[in-house]
Image (cartoon, rainbow, N blue to C red; front, top):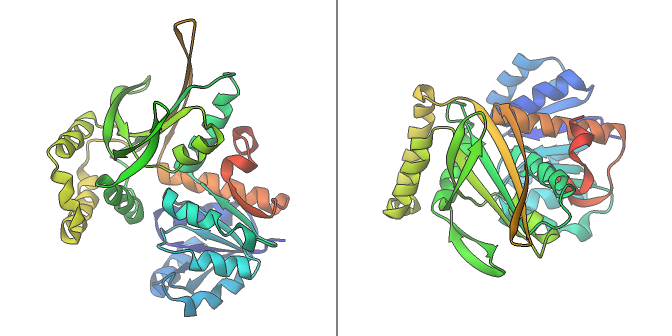
Length: 343
């Protein structure tokens, strides 16, 4: 039975929204955790009597004993290793993660033998998460799916959290592997332009991006081509980033001072952006039959991507309270369908 939940990064943008929703919708003791105890204390004072501050540093294993206060840990920051996940599994603590970093998720998947009494849920949030569920639902409407395209649209008018900005900037100069024309190829983030039409916004230039959903879905669809693209609501920004890539200017992001400077610029620029807080996921499934291209698609629109990630997480926690989830390590779409969470 889950009586207490610890949200690591709980005073951040996404973690704070998760905490607020859980306090409103459950009776769980909510532990707001992070490296800065003063920030956790201040946040707890804002959100209610059932929130308690906890200090923990994911890089310091000596601080992991505080995890024993929780029945469930929700991780809202990116990690470089699985030490904390292993500690949770060793002590039969349930674990949930919102990261979009597939390299880290693969490392967690290797811990399956350690999951004796714990339920681990990965790919929880907007993308991955909601994107996986939309793809799963769309697949049911087409018997054979040769290509599956997922386009993630983010609004530049939303005040994104530092962690989200840092992850996007970190990825901008990185390469990854995808399946193209039956062959595994290496591609660079924000290349491979595709034009995606959103009926509320019009056409947007979208580019390949290393969200983890395409990798987990590809394993379930070995004979299909599965790609995830990223675009922003302000079209000139999409085109500008593509030009910077072609000119190889993004290679400067290998220098920490350049990367940190860009993160600061993006944080400040959000206050003056002409964009909105809209976000969307468009999933398109295609096949060819008798030289004819058949396509079905589905679009999910919302406002405030951080809030949607928090909502998905909160709903999964409520499901865990109502009924225990299977022991083991699972991605969200392996446990739920879209209608299970959003009726």
